[in-house]
Length: 229
Picture 1 (cartoon, rainbow, N blue to C red):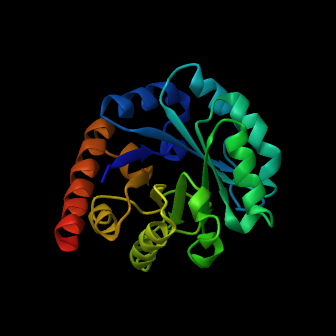
Picture 2: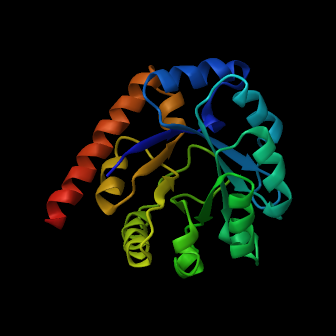
Picture 3: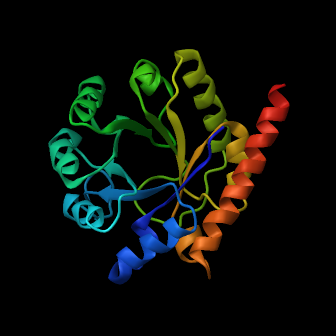
């Protein structure tokens, strides 16, 4: 299982964003997670395509953009033009999920779908074969630093089974409360891609924290492998 650590810039120092991004990439981060919130789908208001375009001028890293927005179809082309590599939309934000996943791919990006804690995995079962990424939220989206939703571990396990049944090689990403005390059990449950903002950017050494989280996730992933034999 390939482990990916994705620092979320929601918890970075926005006055020194390029430096913070460079720091975690130097620590081995695999991709940079951009939480895009519109103040409507969620109560918070954060970044837009111009921030992604600015980041793209300073890094060639994978930019993984998570749209917590209503009407996500209107944002596909702006984020593609800004340089996003992965665009994830919420199943709860659209009645035309397959259409929007296809549009994301047609715009040259990898396509992800996110589901909130209370949303059933059935919402993504039909689209699973087309996904490049499935994001299981382990907090209610909107603000960083929230407490981890413990039932999410079992949901990740069931999401891994769903992807296997679909024959999908999509990344299984988790976002919300990912830290040293949760990442191992999430990896053991089958997650391979981990969004962490507060845990990384509030650490004394964010670059070292990326490495610490990776080691714990690899340990959990190894336990999953042992149990599967």
